Length: 611
Image 1 (tube, rainbow, N blue to C red):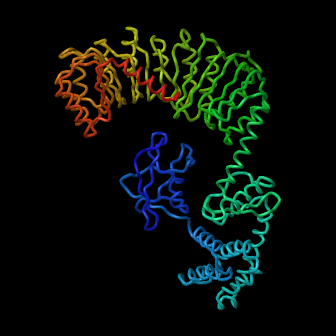
Image 2 (cartoon, rainbow, N blue to C red):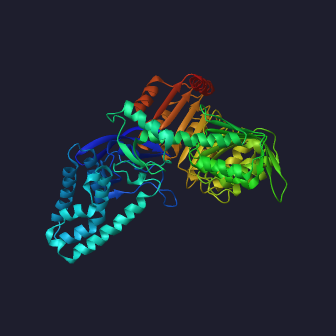
Image 3 (cartoon, rainbow, N blue to C red):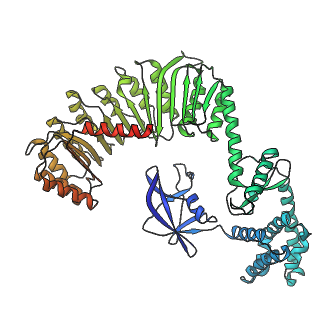
């Protein structure tokens, strides 16, 4: 998701403003965005410190390459070392309109100027012999009249070196590099030696009619090179072509996607290129088909929704497929309808209906039939194969009276640190939530939950025993009116060692009742209430002042909503002033009940989506 903030980036004497990007909750500066303004840069520096690209837990650089944005500072950019600088000079020589010998002379003159900048001339030339020959060999591609490379190099070597022992060493290095270049020239593709500054094309080389079609297109519509710089491509049959990578990559990408679509349809599936939805019905899916589909997904086969209906496959193949879908694909929605999972040494099982939505490192799983063994086993497979999603969204109704089976699934998961649970209205579900074994629960959100009196007290008791929670979200259409629960909840959170944020919806606050007294105390003395919703209440001046203190002084309360509440106009204006000075990020003052407002908002979003 794009962020509205701007990062200043400096290259040489030029400063550009680049829009930042929000990735996984971190405001970042993307290398590819900077390269659109300064194509040759590949590193960032703030002050004298080179910035490291963001990495995962194993130390691997995350894609796309990015660093954490520093809005209040100017990020300096750097080019690669001498090799790239010389490559840029070669690019200018290639594009020059003047005589080729003169252009090459200017290039070599630059190298000779570098020689004068060090005391030991021979050391520099010996160290850069390979680089010089690479640049000159590149010139021979376009300037064949240069003749023998050794002759050209000999004309630029200082006379004092030609008579020394260094000259023979140089000749040996020249021959070695020449042999390497000849060997590389015989390979199928030379995209990696593109003479311009952009990154090489990552797709398979075009050839035959497709390349001729692109060549003709460029000659007809782009003889002034308005489409961008051309890149040197060696086709499979050894011919050299200069193509625009934008169109070259597009044609190759479409060709590759067409191959994946054909393979998927050969399995018996159907793929909608407009909606990116794929469906496979009534197939006995083989291991070979699973390998093909996994390879296609990891190599860019863009499927948004994947559905299996009345299919069967082995459990090992299901695990391999789920691992790719969850961690390495573009799939956002997975639907399973009456899928039989075959096992070699155990009884087969059937998953009647399941949907999984994958968004922002959270996956939402729903089973829509009465509980069956297939529900538990399918959820166990999902949790076992998941490596990157940290939050699980599930409905307790799917495991009603089978909470121990759900607990076993969650206990086997090592990556889940956040839970969103719907319809958690019995104590067995709460026990399951608070007793994870392999992972520590940090975030908990309950929706349409805690509506039964026994669960209110039990939730507070389980909260007192927990030692890992950081964020609790109890804010949905459920508003808590029970006075004892509100008092006990605030006390439990106050005594908790790790909880930093509480989102809460309270109803029925009246001046001087216990809910108001304890809420005012928490707002003034504690720093954990960040999002508060008040419904059907009389908001007193004392409570308003507590809101202002928590927002302006503690700087903790940033989201405040009022629905169907009585409040003095002066108090409303005071709260609105908090929003104007940015102490409050969001303020809602509505005369309607919250359920009406949220329903209208949902309908409005639905209508926009349909349009």
